[in-house]
Image (cartoon, rainbow, N blue to C red):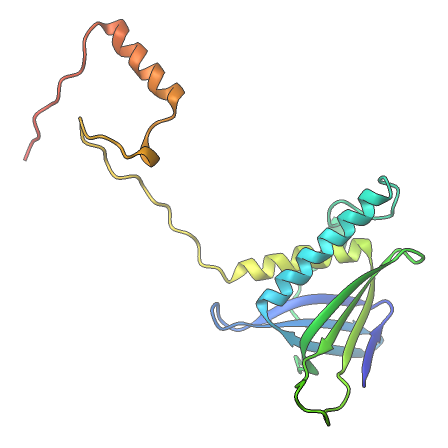
Length: 201
């Protein structure tokens, strides 16, 4: 079972290659001339980032705010550079695990190679193990979530259809109560109600 161990890495990031809708996602660790690249699914990247933030938030909460865990990603640890080249996949990730090393104030991330559980003769899976600081973990999460969101097409703005005079709105379209009362009072002050205007061709 090859273990790619980085304690700590010089760089640990998530990245993606390809066009939106057909992107391939990677985790990449680098240190002392070594480079390890593992492939995984987009949902795995999002799940890892989300669980990292949850883990750090829990550590900070349980310590009463005394743990060396920043609430946000430190600006000086931001990494927007592309993946290191060559991007050569060492293995594809199946399962991942997270732990907090309280003694060293580090997050330990393990990504294990996907295996065929029905093949009893398959070799032990490879593992990428990375130890990073809480600040580096926040920075990893920030970048990973940005990469996941980058492939989503922008949601077009939807304009409400023009409402004709006298047409009744469905319950989901009705104005807030406070707005309606304000409108009714303005009509009471004028002492007259608006009359429908004839439609023009």
